[in-house]
Image (cartoon, rainbow, N blue to C red; front, side, top):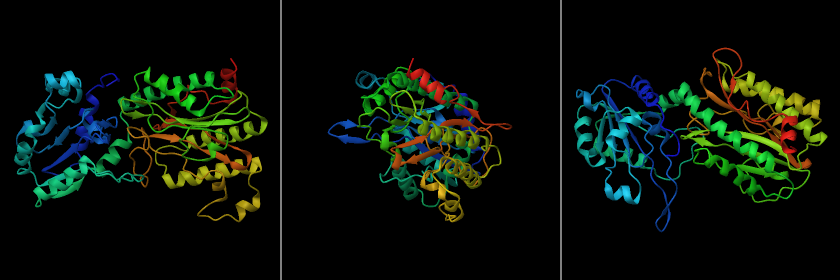
Amino acid sequence: MKYDLINSNLFIKNRKNFKAKMVSNSLAVFNANDIYPIGADSTMPFQQDRNLFYLSGVDQEESILVLFPDCPNAKHREILFLTETNAHIAVWEGEKLTKEKAFETSGVKTVYWLQDFDKIMKEIMSQADTIYINTNEHYRANVATETREARFNKKIKEQFPAHKVEKSNPILQRLRSVKDPLEIDLIQQACNITEKGFRRVLKFTKPGVWEYNIEAEFIHEFLNNRSKGFAYTPIVGSGNNANVLHYIENNQQCKAGDLILIDAGAEYANYASDMTRTIPVSGRFNDRQKAVYNAVNRVKNEATKLLVPGTIWADYHIEVGKLMTSELLGLGLLDKADVQNEDKDWPAYKKYFMHGTSHHMGLDTHDYGILTEPIQANMVFTVEPGIYIPDEGFGIRLEDDVVVQETGEPFNLMRNIPIEIEEIEDIMNS
């Protein structure tokens, strides 16, 4: 891995919190993700299952974590199963985790090779009444491919049909949504790397560059700072491309006078950052662009203040809608009749700001969190309002990542990334 070794206390604490939520005499199993084939002998870069990583820090394929807090054999209350490393593997692929290194990484004392999994599993399943299976139930999930975890879940229910089955997901949704200070430090590191990339782009951008040139400047800075790369597929949308919310082609030339909407963030140690900035190709905003930009920035700043413990997700978005409606009236994009006659299920402001303002962030860019439950301290959210005006040939979105505090306003993890018009123009023209 490119990143520095993470303190194993994070994963020890995460397992302790998870085990405290398990029913008596139950065990839970978490499998690594598959390595997905492309064609011939080519594969996609490996991405670890986020729940396995959250509970162990193990970032290696074909790994399994078993938690059985009530196991009569104390040795089997936490177990890691790993692919056995050897000299041949070390030459061709690089050395895999040894048992000693796995303990240093995870804090799990009992480590077996994967070849022993079936034998050990049969033994401990005879001692348990319930098994927790790992499923992806994120509200945005759309999984078309059968995962390694899904295959395991199917197999285990066939092999042990008399066992009760519980879901790990509700526990993990709540645990993962509230960040440990060590996690916040990792997200801050990802944000710091993103800042370096953005500052590089500000000095690089000028009329005639291509959107993919800007993408390349980011990846250069990310890789040079121990990141694997983008936390998600980046958006570099110049001109009217900014009005396509999930524009990812990044293949058009940037023209003088246009704006560029850049939605890009680095990952670090599997933790995401998520930034959006909108900058002028020529290094200066015109008066209309400034007016819309400042309106978006005001909404972002006021919306951020609303992210306090106890806030209900749906109520938050209603309040942000009111903020945006006021700004759109001031810009002349809406009039009072538009607001008075609006459909309450699709308010007038949605014509120009049609997406949500915030989402949970962490190991996943759109991280776990139950939206019907009140916001808590140490949750990390994006704040990303936008105004999109196809008729005027530009769209503006601004996005920061913030940590909810026990009292006061959220802490902005992107506080050092330029966002004010004057600072952006000064850097671009320096």
